[in-house]
Image (cartoon, rainbow, N blue to C red; front, side, top):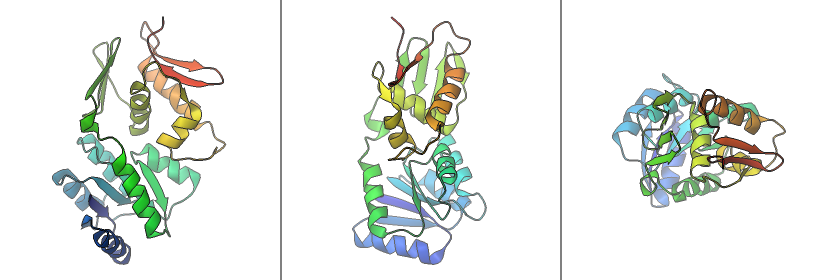
Length: 225
């Protein structure tokens, strides 16, 4: 795989780059958020490793800019900021996974391999339509009844996750694991809060509600019968 490592600490960047090269992967290194954005937009990378504390643009701002420019390669945030709140902020900012320093290279490699194994967007439909809702997955744009709906990166990921499973029940546990990377209950209402905010943008003011709560079970995106 081709990896872009955005890390300003020379020792950490060198450690990651050497380890990946030794396991047969191609690695480029950027030393700042701005350089990471430029390289991320110019190169066809399979996955990005992004520090949060960077010169110039911080990691979250760099990710947001890459996403706004249509870069869909998965991003692993690598940082010393390891609280639940920090992890949530990183994942909501567009990251696909989050690893806290200090870390074992074997775990970093396993997480990168897992991200790359996910089905690429190019192998999936670029447009998902349900009733008057249209999702452009390549540009990450959402239109309902001809009106553009502005979503945060995490709200978009939540909507697309539901949209890839139209008519299927999606449980809270599935969302915690897939979108927030929690393999345990963080004892927060993060899923309910995001679904509520997403529903307020996607459903409120329209004739038909597409996102439904199945009490005690989960959520479903579908047209009502």
